[in-house]
Image (cartoon, rainbow, N blue to C red; front, side, top):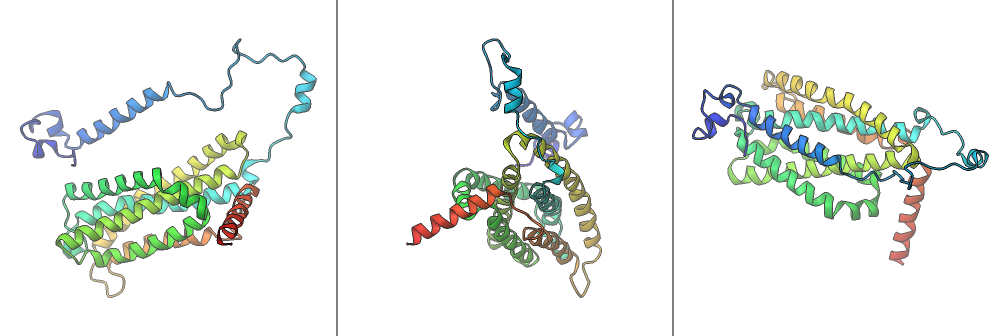
Length: 303
């Protein structure tokens, strides 16, 4: 259920003269903020996985020369690590698509039928997204680890990108249905998109982690999140502008408004799909070793 417009949906609890009546979308934002604050507070008690404690609170160094001999060689610059940087770029393009889709889908769903939308209410859109999120959670917890070990993150991302392109191509035709058929089809399409997007995101993060040593993963993650944030910022702005343009071009003879929207989304996904191939996306030695292990296991099982 959507918590927006509480004064209209729950007049017995929130009056129109109250703070929530004057600011109709304050309640959902407040709930999200409180949840984030609680999670942040609980994070203070989470143990640090790579932090080593000693009895005196510090390491006692008895032989400095021995320590220097054991020191690792200078680390490779992360910006010169092409397996890392290529996976970050591919990951960011996928995230650009996901953020644009996240902006466009609710707008498209609530737009009227004569504009190519579904004529859904905000509550119905919330139900679709809630179902998709719940299925995605179950999939990530119970199915993704097995599938990733079997096929690997790269193949899984490629197959997932192809499925997403097919699913998004069906959206303009799904909008022509109504009633129970529409509900089933849009729920199924949304579940497929969100689940596969989560698979691709997780797979790209695994590639980034395997491209660097454990001591460099923190810095690599920082670079990844910075680049990804730039693409994520462009996603909603570009998606909103694209959808606004589409609403005024519904009568085009070729790729009318809503069809053009999903065509652009598919184009971004296709670019990301092409980028998952060589020579652009390079693989670290660890990824190649894991792929070889999978091939050996498959050969052993088949024989």
